[in-house]
Length: 245
Image (cartoon, rainbow, N blue to C red; front, top):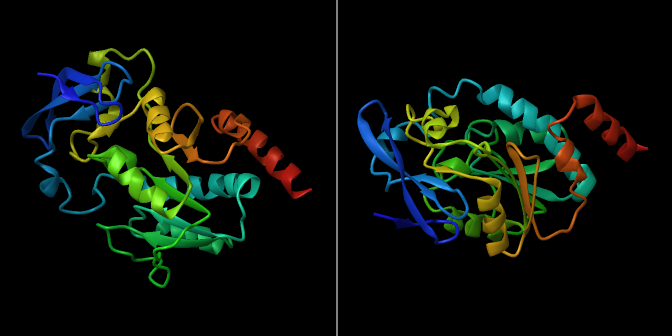
């Protein structure tokens, strides 16, 4: 039986089932319009989030190191680097700590995790120059609701989530690594079209590197930066050098 897509409200139809947490046969649905892929109502989440950050997430440090290198480029080009910034779904505060060590005024926000590395820097209810949110969107049961909360903090949301590869059929999707059924935490997977629709719902423009790094913002910016974020590192460093001239 079709269910309404959480992004565009078009009917989503049953796509396939996968074994979640090694024991639950869970139905996945795919929107016929925007391609958004989501699970049935995730009744297993309390079990999946026994720990806020999955034990299997062994790449958490390296991932934050990479983001801490790229995000300053985005901030320095398109935002006021003297402003305040908030990391939403900040986990243990690793990214906030790294960014503060680089001289950026970042603050921590997470409803579910413990702040370990940024204890003196809890976010307050105010507007921020930019909100970052890395590896959070795929965890959202109701993306519109949470993006609405994010937009109360900032008119610009810089985030990561890996896009569904174009051309994937249902069998490809069922075997896709980013589905992560063993953790049970990835319940929403996106196409570029679905994120564009989500951004427009909040009156925001959408920019992407076409893979895993995206920006919702009310600003109008040159999209060239995002088109090169998947290119060679020396190009990024070259552009950063030009900014510093």
